[in-house]
Length: 251
Ligand code: ADP
Image (cartoon, rainbow, N blue to C red; front, side, top):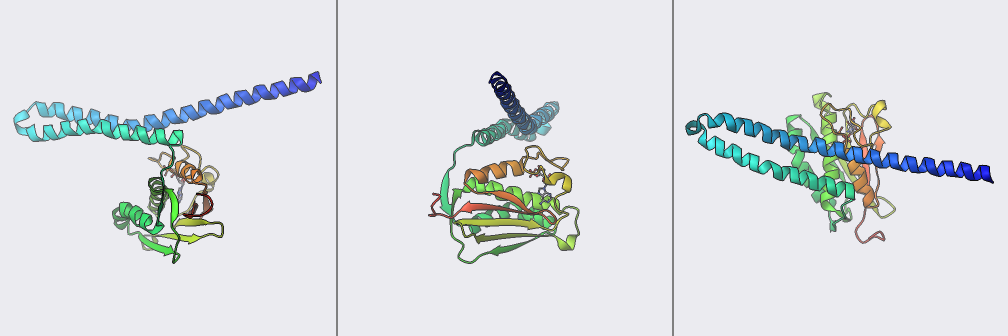
């Protein structure tokens, strides 16, 4: 009995240590994310301030530009504030503001944000939306973030591919279990073996400028709705996620 109790105690101790380690890791991740996100507005402020100082040497000539640059300095902290709010919402889990809406409208809206970038790279979009697609019940802003992350990844994935084969397909159809499934596929090189096992981990990225948070955040957001987000095919890449149909039993 004593031996068993000692073993159990060691296990508890080990579990407590692990919990503590996980909390520290999460705190470390959060700190890193905040540092990364704040760096941009802070260095913008520093650059504008330096530019303003040199414009002050000849205020007659640069007066208008100086006023404009000072205005930008005043605006940057707002951007930093928004970043902080977004991160706080994410790490706290936020709280969903669910509404009933039609997916095609949200897909259109998400496409409008990336259309110019896609056109510059000769990427064409193909939509395969099931007829009479039922409305979904979800946080529209968060689902816009998810779609945007998947579209941005698909666009970036085709950067090096052949120009005449750059296509992104977005499909949506109803599943048997009161969920709608949305898939985004591209025909870039696909997900590498090295990335495949850790795609959804925070800070897992293969991009020089990547943050590696897009998929981790997107999956968390979808799961908070009772849905799932997964890699359906690695090469070429296809990501799918599910959302509850409005009026179905999950509401
Ligand atoms: P980031 O885009 O900042 O790297 P993500 O979490 O969105 O962060 O993506 C993580 C990684 O998953 C990417 O760096 C890339 O290696 C891989 N990935 C995501 N989408 C695709 C895609 N459509 N094709 C190929 N690789 C992808």
